[in-house]
Image (spheres, rainbow, N blue to C red):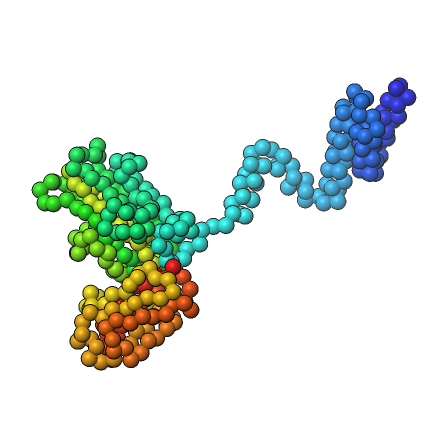
Length: 362
């Protein structure tokens, strides 16, 4: 045992004396100590000393070979600098959210809901808030949407003002929002207070507390009630990264129900959709959302005096399908060659514009 210990200490002294060539010796001796003499009680201590000597030797060699490392590596040894470096590497390698436009969502899948976040600027309630899902007890049927309801006739402790804010969207030029909405129920006059649902735009922060949102639409007084309504909202504002907020508010003894579905933004369809939809109710697309095919209905017979042309555009404004010489009030369109997403169906009677309807393909 004494002889074995003497050999080990001789090796240590030799390593300290010849530090320039120590790296290979240390690795071999350390392996020997761990495998050949694991039961020797002083082996771990000696191995640690060898390791410290080896590390110091490597530092000295590197410092002589690369002098700039003396200035770089020394500060990194402090805990604060190490933590800062780790944080920098984490954020530098983490993908950032990218602003999109065109953007479409049906609020159906987890991917559709990704990026949407809720802010409650008044009374914080887990019952009365924006939610995703199907509302089978309303007139919406089996249709998934983002919805908000509140029956405040019995009184809620405070005013509700809940913001459902979109992911970052890109608005490099004036754009359009397209969405479907339905007011499922509302208070009659005489309850006092107020209720409503408005659309806001922010070109800076998604957080309403920052105070830079501007109102772009008010859906509260829209008619008819209890029916899905397709609408478009023009956004004159521009921003590299902007946000759209669906804002539900209610105060006093009121009740109000709002559903929103098939939300889309685009900045490239102004030329296609700039006409007024004066004949919006003269056209029906069913089913919508559609799958492999869809039926189009023209309810006004006067529109069929001239052959009708139907053009379908994707969210980039590209014409993807044209159906000409339509003379029937009801006709089917094959959609199997189109991918899932949002489309816009433009109806023309000769040179006369009829309407533009939004269509979602699942």
